[in-house]
Image (cartoon, rainbow, N blue to C red; front, top):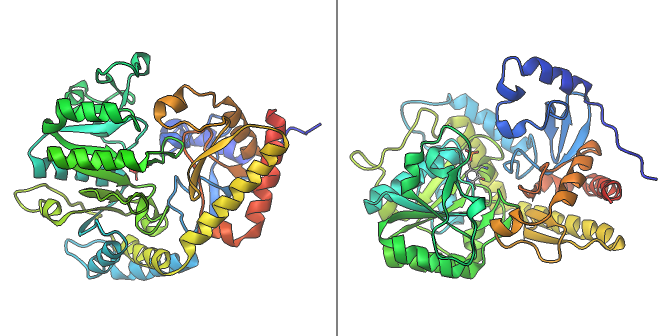
Amino acid sequence: MTKLPTRNLTKSNAQFQRAVKRLPLGVSSTFRYWGDDRTVYVHHGKGGRTWDIDGNNYVDYRLGYGPAILGYADDRVDAAARKGMEVGGVFALSTERELTVADRIAKMVPAAELVRFSNSGTEAVMAALRLARAHTGREQYLLVEGGYHGLFDAAMWMSNMDEWDLGSNTDPELVPYGKGIPPTIKQLAHITPMNDYERLEDMFRKHGDRLAAMLIEPIQGNCCSIMADPAYVRLARELCTKHGVMLIIDEVKSGFRVGKGGIQGLMGVTPDITTFAKAVANGYPIAVIAGREAVMRNFRYGGASHGGTYTAHSVSLAAAEECLRILDETPALETLAAYGEKLKAGISDILNARKIVHSYTGHPSMFGLFFAETPPDNYRAWKTSDYSFYDQMAYFLHDLGVIVEPDSREPWFMCEAHGLDATCLTDTLKAVETAVDLTL
Ligand code: PMP
């Protein structure tokens, strides 16, 4: 009989009890709270692994929600960041490296004619929406179910699941993610189910001429890496062009991960505005708003405001310069995608041997695992599917030294270091085998 795994979290549990007195939920991001007795405090990360303060070692497929594309504490990027420190941090002035990094981004992503830097994905998408509004003179915007675009008020809406009715052509009602989001904002927002062509056309027929922007994450990094059909994104592009709407492709998670040119490169769709963040600097805080010149020129006095004390911080910028150089000039992305393929194949061998039906979504560098023959093709299909097997398996995996999202919402993220350290694969597959047997 398979033995129940045990993991010593004595120090993390004690830290939680101390931390919760000062920090709400004992954490600095609500998503890092995994229960009073399972909230982990990290000692350090290196390569594809993380060590907690109890000394437990994990192969890490969270990678800080995706940023550590090369692996934690990458020597090359950290050396560059140290040089960036010598520059002095932030000034009320600009530095030369802003152009160097912007040029690299423009080379890798053809739609990035002009580039602006921000600090986080949330800030970048917020600025992108403002830019779209400034350019079009319109206020309304369209979201796609299952997308996530950060924590600002306009992005924190989902459709009311109680009212899902795929048959009708009425707009889904919007409900906020949690409290503190003014309901008045809802008047400006619309939402549509991904990969539903008819409803998209209907949405544009009804609201297209009042929309400033359509925001889409073609590979939903916050909904199990469910992918839009390329044809769906192409339809979005056509409808946006026809109605004068800015197509914003949010590549905060997929950018510089699924390919040098992002998911837009793989799908062959050119947005008006794109946002990047996570993988840009291997985890140093920096984000990017990029797009069509005529649109981006709205960032000016008397146009759309954008800036901030910490934008283009010298440490993040130097890290970005080196990280993007590596992603552009070395086979790092191929290495991590090949690792993802090997990992999927290994997991499938284990599951097939037990006749467990399963499937994958997304890209090998960020994939979702499902226990169904056909993976869901949008948020509704995922929400109404049975993900209990996955969730239970993930719970065991944590105890067995593999960090994945505790529910199936976020994909497994690969980094270059996973592919360069053969023990990551063997340790993961051993843990998966045990976790599956425990779950059965
Ligand atoms: N857009 C997408 C697609 C994201 O995945 C995220 C973060 N998970 C954001 C925006 C917000 O980024 P941040 O957490 O850096 O504010």
